[in-house]
Image (tube, rainbow, N blue to C red; front, side, top):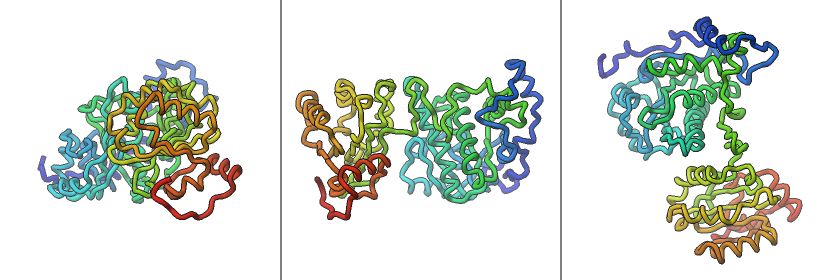
Amino acid sequence: MDPLGAPSQFVDIDSLPAWNDYSEADQLDSLKTQVEKPQLDIRSPFPYRKDINAKIILWKGNVALLNCTAIVNTSNESLTDKNVVSESIFVHAGPNLRDELQKLKGCRTGEAKLTKGFNLAARFIIHTVGPKYKSRYRTAAESSLYSCYRNVLQLAKEQAMSSVGFCVINSVKRGYPLEDATHIALRTVRRFLEIHGETLEKVVFAVSELEQATYQKLLPLYFPRSLEEECHSLPCLPADIGNSEGEPVVPERQIRISEKPGAPDGVDNCGRTVMVVVGRNIPVTLIDMEKALLYFIHVMDHIVVKEYVIVYFHTLTSDYNHLDSDFLKKLYDVVDIKYKRNLKAVYFVHPTFRSKVSTWFFTTFTVSGLKDKIHYVENLQQLFTAIPPEQIDFPPFVLEYDARENGPYYSYPSSPDL
């Protein structure tokens, strides 16, 4: 093969058969051994959709050779990984790609970043970083891999792309089990096409010979090609099929990862990252606290490298949502020093008398160095002297509660701190 990738080597995706065009016979024979009498009156959560299937292509080949709007590159955080997919893309794209990647200054796990395709047939390359898989961190890995696929698709939508060629993002070097990862890939794409189907005409899964069998096995579960195949696929779906967008649901916690109790928002008046935590979104009695601790570290690790503040909404929080002081102490003890050093303030919004007493006791007798960083905020108007309102994504119930108790807020001069 010519290492420069002559145009004749590139494959026009319009010449490839869609998933609809593949025969169902072999797959149905396999499925029927598991379900002899399908219940035709029960529909799958992934029902037969001929229009969606027509957008899907499974192709055994090199993603770098696809002639489509964008192809996907799987890499590491510094975008220098030397896996089979990346190396092939670099060879065919030419030397300008490496120069362009240096300008991106890396990519965090789960994110997606865009470059030109240079000498590729594809106009763009979307670079993403899959998670390193360890069984004890499975929850975080599932969430990150979902984010990879979702962010690639979202970027394609924002850029009005008509087609995307996916490599298998979970590289062998990162250790993600192929079948588990394929479930996440297929259901995320399926859900995206259900919601935003008008924005994409084709989605290609470019796989190796090793990966092809797994994709052929699992595609009918999420993209059944007939009502009969849908019925026979239904019992083969895993227990966790994700939420309405394909995002993982963790059964033992009974809480959607999308309903995160914490998420980074904007910046305060001093330019520090604002991390919002919503107390009412923390169902303490249902959460596996050990996994919650790992998840918190996963979410926060890239935020705490620079100065940050936390806005904690205690609004309408009940006993059901109160974190145990032993858990908070453990959290404070295990996190890296950068968490403590770079945390500059905690804005405790809508505190109750009980929460003030508990916080005072905790910061006085249980941990040190945190007491002076706590600021009690009785109303949002007070919060806005430190953080502009447009920098925070407010839960609606917080705004409604504050307006009811304190009246609507009005423009107020900013000051650097409370």
